[in-house]
Image (cartoon, rainbow, N blue to C red; front, side):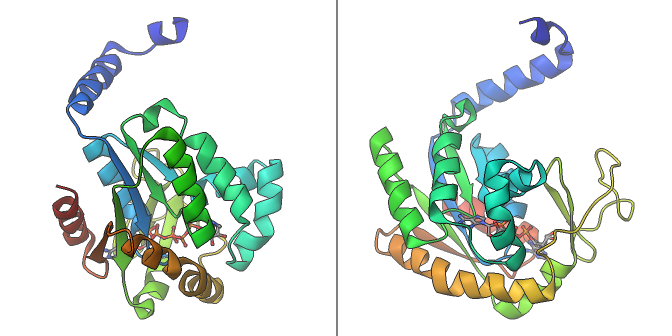
Length: 240
Ligand code: AP5
C-alpha cells in the first residue's frame, strides 16, 4: 500500500482506465509460432495491448535466467548458444508457473512455446486442468531466405525486450533505446551460423507442432514476409 502512495496520480489513473477498458475484452489464449526472425516478438506487444493478455516469451525468460546465472539459466545456456532447443521439462515448468500470474487472467500470448509436440501435449494438459484451451495458433509463415537479414540486423534493449532493426525498424539514435536512451545489444545467437541450427530445429521439431494444431482446426496462417504494419492488420483480422 505504501508503494502505491508513491505512484504519481496520473500513472494510477491511466492504469485504472486500462483495467476498465480490459474488462470489456474477450478472453483469448493464443500461440505464436514461426521460425526465428519471423516477427513473433514484434507483433506480440501490439496484440498484448489490444486484448489485455500476458505475453510469455520462453526465449526472453530463458535469456533473463542465463544473465542472472540462475540454476535454470546455467542448464539452458549451452543449448541456446548453439541454437538448439533446451529440454522440454525446463520450459514446461516455467510456462506452468508463469500462467498463474494475475496478468494472465484474461488469457495469454505464448511466444516461442510450444516448440515440440511434447510441449504442446503438456500445455494441453495444463490448460485442461484449468478448464480452458488454446483459441488460436498464429502461424508466421515465411521463407527461410528472408530471415538472415532480419536476424543479423536485429538490436535489442535487454531490460524491456524492445527490438529494433538497422534497416526495417531503426532506433531514433543509432545504437540506443528510444525510450530510455540505454545502449542496445545484439543477441549471442543472432549470427548467420547459429541461425542455421535454429532453423534446423524449427523445421525438425517445431513444424510438427503446426500440424498438431492444424488437426485441431485452430491454425491461422499469416504472410509474415509482408511489412510489419500489414502483418498487424492480418493479425487483427484473424482475431476479430
Ligand atoms: P527465442 O527467443 O524464442 O527466439 P526465436 O524463436 O528464434 O525467435 P526470435 O526472437 O529470433 O524471432 P521473432 O520471431 O520474435 O522475430 P522478431 O519479431 O524479433 O528463442 C531463443 C532460444 O531459446 C532458442 O533457440 C532455444 O534455445 C531457446 N528456447 C526458447 N523457447 C524454447 C522452447 N519452448 N523450447 C526449447 N527451447 C526454447 O523480428 C526479428 C527482426 O526482424 C527484428 O529486428 C524486427 O525489427 C524485424 N522484423 C520483424 N517483423 C518484420 C517485418 N514484417 N518486416 C521486416 N522486418 C521485420
